[in-house]
Length: 416
Image (cartoon, rainbow, N blue to C red; front, side, top):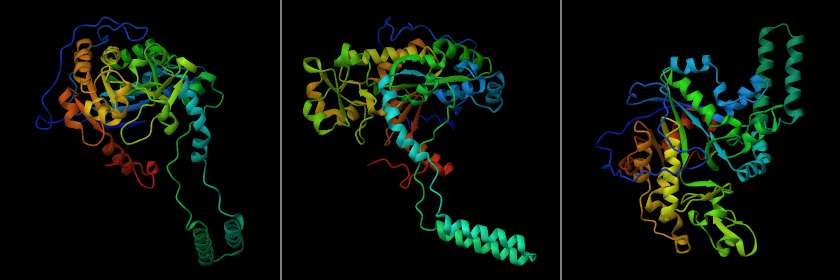
């Protein structure tokens, strides 16, 4: 959970708008057809720098389940809790990770659990003879000595001895947080293990109550003057997405040589003559996310499908945080996937965001768009029509300053 404030850029900071008009598309992305935004109550104009409260949707519903003793949904947040958000002055609630995810993401996360548990385990205790004996000596002295000065001296000696035991011991690296689920049902445990960004469908996860639970929660928040923000992952989808079989042209494909050379960045779907090799989603500087498959923005058909996906999300909320939005910029996409473009149809020079934003705002004209960006690409995204840009590097640095327990030895570093 986190709270953050958005600052709207000045006109001087913004590049010229590049919004494009597109024809109306009446196709649905997923089981729910795209329709007009169904806000239940009129909202006051948003302040220039809104305060946003971030909630991990899956953690929240897990806690609600433990509290109730039975499966909970997003709409089980109590009126008291919603009132507290309003009374605290928050303009919006950002529900992170509400979408239906893929089984491969759950399997990948399960494989990572042993390492996560090891990282989250408490540090080993100091050797008993070196520390425990001194503490016992101090306790014995306090019981047998009546002079306060002698008691203080014994405590000081014990403290110095314990410091010797701990001196030179390496500091713990950043550990992954784990939340005990206790006797929650299997679906609750599965929910905590799937990767939020490995989206298989832009419908609210069944374990969170589906689209209906979100719609009801949104109505209740609107009644308190609070907007709902959701996320949108344009760069990739779940590794076991149906497109790997039905529409492989939507995805970045690889060669057998790339799979052999970089098994962490490529994977194979199927066997024999029908086998396909696909790339995991990634950015130019890091290895792939192994529970995802990279979308091919050199494909006009793929861009059309993702425009529909964003439009559907826009119909369900008041604001969208677009994760890693700079990765869909043609220059970045080409830099990342230059070596793969020969085996993928299309060109990498076509802009996605102007078209997608125009279509989303046709569905919801009051939609607020936030683009996550690394390495100084804010003005480019603002020129596409984003209302705000979120500099991930600055965000992580601020979090490290305010929450040192999240820092690693090197901090959060972006390669140059």
